[in-house]
Image (cartoon, rainbow, N blue to C red; front, side, top):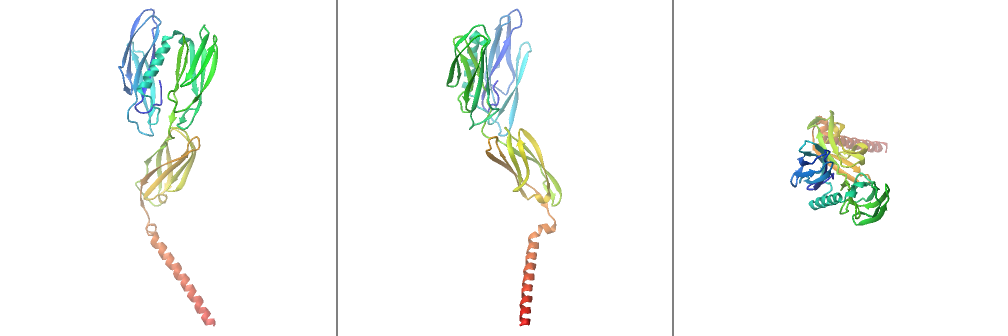
Length: 342
């Protein structure tokens, strides 16, 4: 099951069903829970003794997803004997998009795999070199192909998009191959095929536009005395690890964090005089490659200042007047003293 999809994406699901009995049995397989169902939720199959078959469904992620949130939905498949399998589907606003045509094509590939019986004797596994990619990054795919059967495999074509390699595998032989990966590749499907085999592996890369840090201020005082202690609580939520965070309030650095990932509530201890009527909380940060980003929120606080704090401008004028008067008086005294001496 493909994961980390975006909104309005189609999800192909493959369910393996096996008859463990020594007689024929009819089995009904249907979707019990899902975010959005696209096609008929039920499949009917007849299995021979010890036979294994696959059935396929197509689901869809919701149309509207908010930025900064990761959604999960349980997918539950059940049969008429109350055997069930449960998976968790994860999707978010910036997730990869998978069209209905993509889903149908993938199911068609899986059906071809089942038609060629020897495919069960071949293992194909592939891994990406990073946990996630930004849209501007590239990477590597490493695939391992194993012949587990009792027949040599000749002229096996191993392909990722338009890049293909031809190889042969002896009995119980294992080979490793590499492909270049780009988040803008038209398909994330690796195939290994010849006249006897059709094996596929679906990569599930997490592709992000930006770190997408979300800042929400959870708690702050609506009103505070000038010298009182207070606490500002805010939440940070990010879809990938970030580093070198600067937490800035009203153009003053309050705190720093070397790294941050996932989600967490944070607190700032302040005095009333650290706040203004309109306050701006800014988070500056870098992604794993050192690119700079920032996000901010504003909040309003009524500050009860002492009289002298409210009239600071008047006190300043008085001080300036006194300084001016003192300087003027000193100058006059020096002038009179000179005249007296002369």
